Amino acid sequence: MAKLLPASATTAPPASTVSAGARTERLNMRTTPREDALIRAAAELQDKSVSEFVLDAATAAAQNAILDQRSFRLSEKAWNEFIDYLERPAVFKPKLAALMKLVPQD
Image (cartoon, rainbow, N blue to C red; front, side):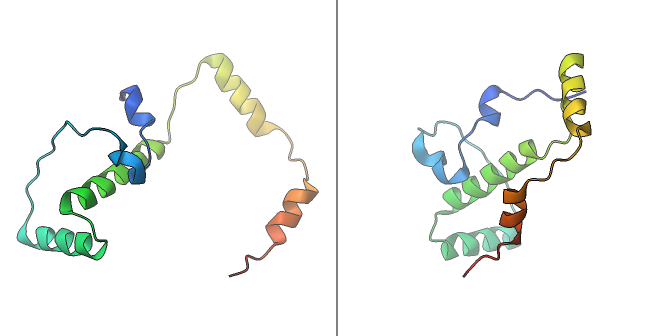
């Protein structure tokens, strides 16, 4: 059975823009001394507070977990349309082929 997420969970802004809204909710966690030291060292390297570092990392991980879902539900009509798109013959796109041959310049 698929788990339903609140609409806001799937439309959350990227981790780098999370600070735009007022933060009213609280998360608490316990860590080992080793985990605490590791997180604090990483936060310091990025010139962030521990809270900011953990929130950015957790938000990015949460977005990836949501986006990485490999199952989704469709109506029978939508499923058939989806399958039709997948089964269409490939069409050669010369501009795309040329683009794929480009080597990025550093």
